Picture (cartoon, rainbow, N blue to C red):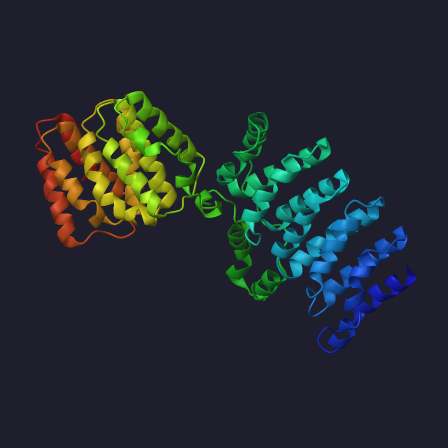
Length: 445
């Protein structure tokens, strides 16, 4: 213990630039210090390692070993000082470089045999997220790992898992929800209640800066005038709260064809509407659980068959097919784009239906089509004009509504030629005999 204390003092006094070699002399002992079997010496050893990490020119070379030792022997130690010092060491290891590798190492503690060790590891991850946010952490493996503490038999572990999940929600917002869908409904409802409690709080901000961020901020601290006012802006940038986070980016791609029953194509082509409805409904339920989809040759066949069912004589079957296409377009994104041209005409034609559930499904699906096509106006232009000149006023009105929604999200303004074409058609719509068409045209203009 006395040796560790002396070492900590020495390390704090060494010059990392002129005496770098002195630090390397102690690297091989760092992991042994945190594993010391004597409780008092172990705490002193942790403080010595912290002094090394804080002052060494290359403090991360033994990071993996140090984190493994902390997770295995320190976070759930009997001595309160050891537990506190070990958490601070994890935060310091995160600060000098990046939290990602530290969190990865701490997640290994989710498999510990002792419940108190698992709970301590979950708490440590929560505190790292609280301090640094999610920008520097690999979210996908962390979100996948939540299943382990949530399924643990020990109530304290499950409680800590809830605390970590609520902390993640503070940063991610609703983007976390798809990753929680496999949890028991009762637990999910309980989490949603807790989420609603923190949703009203101000967006979280990174409370602890990485060393690289501290170095970047140094010139601003010494600069006069308005540079001193930049702290709030920097904090906003670092906050990295997740209202704009896309759940699709966090999800693993799912091969939906593997979820189809062997008799799928036979049933979807059945003369009995109930059989068609049941098989498409099962597909829809599977698609709702799959945020991101994988494209393969079989996926294209699924899309084409659903495209044929848009015109199904049974409105329930047709609506389910349209809803499935919306999920496929949203889940596949760009790979779905080639199928827009072959299936969009049927949606335009189907928009003559006045039943609101059908109208809503068509609107959601056409919007997903446009997004999958990269918000490219050329992908929908011809189909718009087909609908805008349709004999049915409902189709004409819905075509104008679709164009309006597309214009609201396009990243670049249309060319002059396209503007004239669309404007001329919309001006003609202002003279339409149907009030709904006139109103839709005016809104689009």
